[in-house]
Length: 119
Image 1 (cartoon, rainbow, N blue to C red):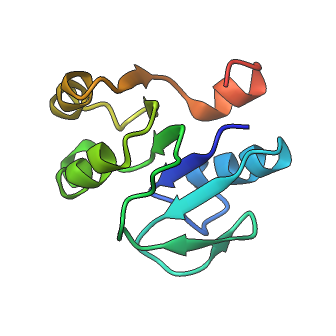
Image 2: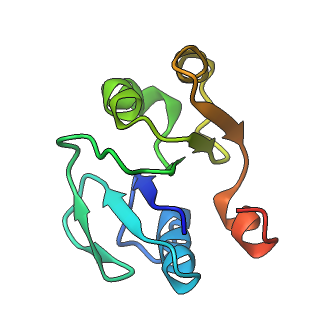
């Protein structure tokens, strides 16, 4: 299974990052939650951005483009196979950096991908 880092994890059940975390875990995926508030989502603690992971397949973004620049280096140093820009997170500057680093980037909805077997 693909280890997924959820950037913008939230304990708010109305947020898509919360729904995706729970869906990923139910489907057997290991997750890492990165966010600004403490708590647990899908039984996994929300961490602050610190040392980049070295075993992440996918980063799924739930942080708006205006708030993404502080995460650029962290994302690039994590070296995921792909980054999913969920609706509202699209960012050409970051996509260009990912492309230059050889990291796949797609604009899609992780929840829809999970629901349709495309994840």
